[in-house]
Amino acid sequence: MNITRYETDVVAWAHQQAMLLRERRFEYLDFANIAEEIEDVGRSQQDELASRMAVLLAHLLKYQFQPDYGNKRSWLRTIKEQRNRLNARLKKTPSLKPSISDEEWIADAWSDAVTSALKETGLDADTFPEVCPWEMPDVLQEDWLP
Image (tube, rainbow, N blue to C red; front, side, top):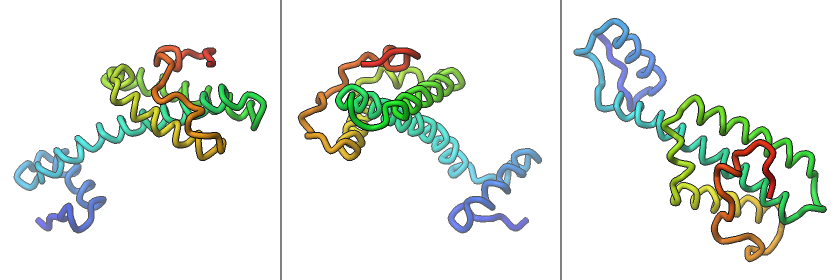
């Protein structure tokens, strides 16, 4: 059998490995790279959660610190959309829930949010708190605003 190497063409490799799994042809499986790819799926889910949280936090910052500037309706739409998507992801993947309680994870999302808000608002860095002042359950609450 002609086996596609992971390093040569990852997409062809993935299709072939899936076929081999379905056919139970275990002798041809690339276990090391399969394990790595499975771990990557988990990391990508965590990355998506953090990215959405950073977008949500950035829009909450803009909402709080620039109340008379910009398109507040657009910010509110984004806040609602990100909350909906975050809550849906947490419901669909409950193993991600501990992330929103993890101080390091929150600090990383906060840092990304502040960086984004600084770029988008032009405000001084000292305008925003160094650490997230909000509780994550509040942030995810449908009608909560700072």
